[in-house]
Length: 178
Length: 301
Image 1 (cartoon, helix red, strand yellow):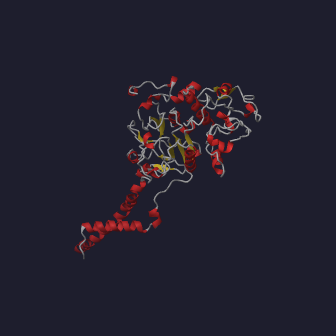
Image 2 (cartoon, rainbow over the protein chains, first blue to last red):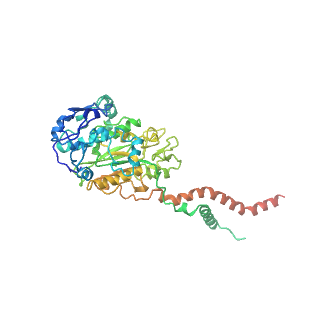
Image 3 (cartoon, helix red, strand yellow):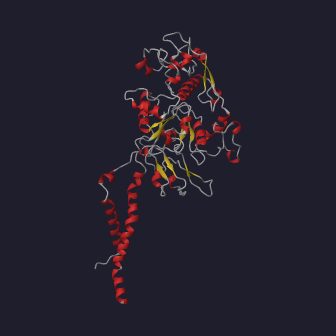
C-alpha cells in the first residue's frame, strides 16, 4: 500500500447513524463526535466492536480527514482527492454508512453506479470493506493489532463457520504433516 | 467401369464430406473467431493488493456449498506453507507468495475463473457443462461420467475429481454459487465474506473499466494489466496485482485465444464424419455390390 499519508496511529471514525453526529459546518473537531461507536455489521459471525472514536480523534491529532475524507470540511490527505476537494465544504453527512453502502452488491446499487454517465465515484467500497481497508492499513503501518480476533472475537456461529475453537476438526493422521 | 480402389474411395469420401459440411455454412460463420462472452455476464475482480490472507472466503465457500469438514480450521495460516490447489473438498483456496517485488507477502485466491469460452465445456463429450448468461460455468453431475477430460482441458487446473467416491466419482468445482446466489443476482458467498473487499462483484464489462481506473488512479500500485480480461478469450473472474503475474502463480503464456479455437476446425469435422460418412459409404457399398446383387438374382431366377 502506498504511503501517501504519514500520520500517527489512526483508525476509522465510524458513525453508523446519522443522528449520532449532526455536525454543523466548520465547528471544532470532536464537538458532536461520538465517544464510542458500536460496529455490528458482522454480528452473526463476530461480536460487535466498541470503536473508541474519542481515542482515535486524539491519535489522528484531530485531523478528521484521515478517515472522513473531505466530508468534515478539512483538506483530504490523499493528493488524488485534491483535484475536486481542495477546499471542501462540510458534507451533509459524515457517517461512513451514508456513502459506503452496507449492501454493496445490490442490483439497484450496481446499476446506479454505472448508469450515470458522468459519475466519477463508481468504485466505492462497501461499509465492511471501508472499515477493514482503512483500519487495517493504519494498524499495519502503526503496529497496532491486525489479527481478526484482536478487534472482534468470533461468535459461536463464527467458530462453526471457521471450523475453529470448539468446532475445530479432530486431528487426523494425514493432516499431521501440516 | 473404372475400378474403385479402397484408397480412392476413402479420398472421395473425405473430400465429399468436407465439401458437404462447408457448403451449407455462410463464410462469416466460419470466420467467427470467438464468441466473446455474454454481454450481461457478471464477474469478480480480485485485487491482490487488498487480500490479507484471512481465508474468510474459503470458510464461506465451505459453508455455502456444504463441503466436508477441512483438515485444519479456516483460521489456521500454516496451510500457506505449501501451494494448494482446488479439490473436491475445497472449491477455492488462497495461496501466499513471497515475491522480490513486494515488501509484504501477497495472497492469491484460486477458484474457477468462469471462462467466456470454457475449455472444460468444449472438451466434455456428454455436454455436462453449461455457460450461463449470468457468467457462471456450471455442470450437471448426474450427466458426468467421470472421464476427467475437462481436468486436462482446463488451462487453470481447476476442476477437481471426487476420487474419494468409489461408486459415483464426478467432477467438482466452483459454480459461482449459481444455484443459491448468482441466478438471483446476488454475489457468491466468498465475495460477501471478504472483509477487505478484495473481491469486487459486478458486471464483467463494468469491472474491466473499474480495473483500468484503479490502475490509472494509483500510479505505481498495480501492474498495468487485468489478468483474465483477454486470457484464453476472457474470464469472468479477473485479477489485479502489484507484482508481475508470473510471480504470484499465474500462467502468463496462455495467450488470448479461447482454448476451443485450437480445436474448432477439427471439431466441426466430427459431426460430419459421424453423420455424412456412414450414409456415403453405405451408398458406395450398395453401388459397388449392385452388380453382384443383380448377378445373384439372375442366378436364382
